[in-house]
Amino acid sequence: MNEIVENLQNQLKLHTLTEAAKIVPALIQQAESEDWSYRQFLGELLGHEQKRREEKQMEKRLKWVAFPFHKTLEEFDLNEQQSLSRKQFKQLSELNWLDQIFNLILLGPPGVGKTHLAIGLGVEAIQRGYKVAFISMGELIHTLKTEEITRRSQTRLKRIREANLVIIDDLMFMAMDPKEANLFFHLINDLYNSSSIILTSNKGPSDWGELIGDPAITTAILDRIAHRSEIVHLNGDSYRMKHRTSIFGGETVQK
Image 1 (cartoon, rainbow, N blue to C red):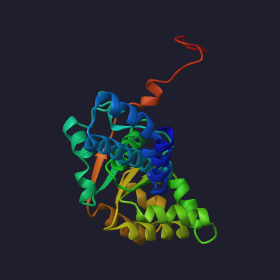
Image 2 (cartoon, one colour):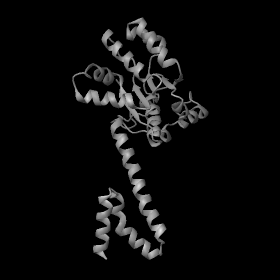
Image 3 (cartoon, rainbow, N blue to C red):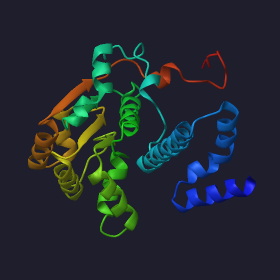
Image 4 (cartoon, rainbow, N blue to C red):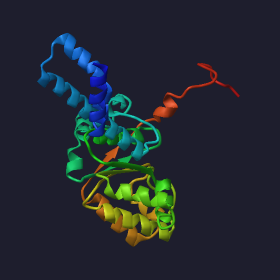
C-alpha cells in the first residue's frame, strides 16, 4: 500500500500537482474511513491543489507589492474616522471604481488613516485577483531616477506599469526639481487609462503646483489624475497620537 501511495505521489509531482501529492496519504485514509466515492476523492484532491495554488499566488502578490505593513479594510475603524460614511466606505470596498479605472485621492493630516485605507483597498484588490503596486513618493522618485542604471528599479517600475492599481503614498511630501517632475509626469501618463491610482497626501491638489514647480507639468499631471477621480477627505485627530503608548504607563510627565 505504501509503495502504491508513493508512486501516486511521484506521478502527481511529475505533473506539478505538488500540493495534492503532499496531502494524498492523509486523504486516502480519510476517504477509506468515510467510504468516499472516487468522484468525491478526486474532487477533494484537486480542490486542495487549486486552493493552495491560489493561496500561494496571493502570498506572492503580497510579497511583490511590498506594503510597509499589513492592514485590511476590516481593521479600519469608521468610528475613529467619521468624515467617511459607512455607505461611502462600502462603495470603496466594492472596488467598482477599479473596474472603471477611477483614481482615488485620499487627503488629510498625518495619522488619520489615509495609508491604512489605501493598503486595505490594495489587499482587497489582491484577494480579488488584481495586480497591485505600492510605493511611497520618496521611493518612487528615487526609483524613477535610477531606472536606467539599476535592474531593481527597472523591475519595480515594470510591475508598477503593469499593475491594475498603483498606490502612491505620501504624495508631495517634498518639492521636486524639474527632472523629477518630468519623470513623475511620464509615469502618470503611462498609467493613464490603463491603471487606477490611489494617492495619499496631506496637501490638496491646489497646493501641488508649488511642490512640482513647473505649472505646465502640474496642469498635465492633474488633468490625467483628475479626469476620473474621487477625492476623499479624512479629518480628525491623529489616530497614532490618540492611541500612542507610553513607557510611563498612564502617568504624564510634568516639567
